[in-house]
Image 1 (cartoon, one colour):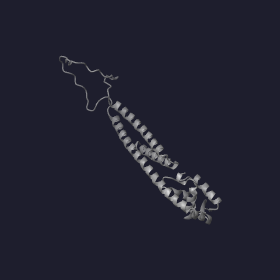
Image 2 (cartoon, rainbow, N blue to C red):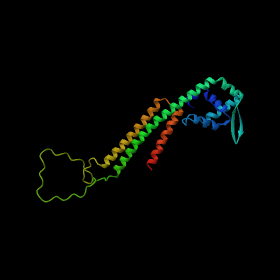
Image 3 (cartoon, rainbow, N blue to C red):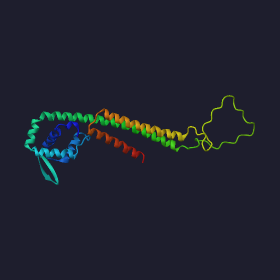
Image 4 (cartoon, rainbow, N blue to C red):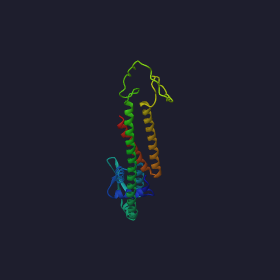
Length: 232
């Protein structure tokens, strides 16, 4: 449950929603989700025990309709709303502030995810280009023509460069497409680890509530779905 509804404030807000007309439990859940712009939705395990307590206290009643319990506020419930009108005004203000904070957090995480996805797409395109390159020959190379007969050329004076390591095919195994592909994968692993660390630090620095963390999880799941579609 979001912190804005601590200390019995959810009970007060349920009375406020029922004061607008009779509703069943899932309708109340939907209205709360809409009030928080989809960034928070209470569970049935949060709503129904409070409705039962409200009924036990004589503040609401219920009737069965279509297999569902439809709850309606009583005169005692309306009297409590009038007595706590100042609390209700403060609660509405706190809800508006909470929605603003949740929206800002969602925007920050979306920007982080978009930037990381752009970087990942770029790295994947580069890895694909490296994979399509020929492994053992550079573009445009062909058979080497035989040298014309004649005296062997005299090597220039000075120290000779150290030969690079030789592959099984007799060619130098200095940097080539295979090395570039490995480097790209290593960079991808580094970017992925950095992304995880930065998002984790961002979330922990804000001391988020459960509902805010669930919002962050949904955003990360959306980024993962986008990558799955990209790699199909």
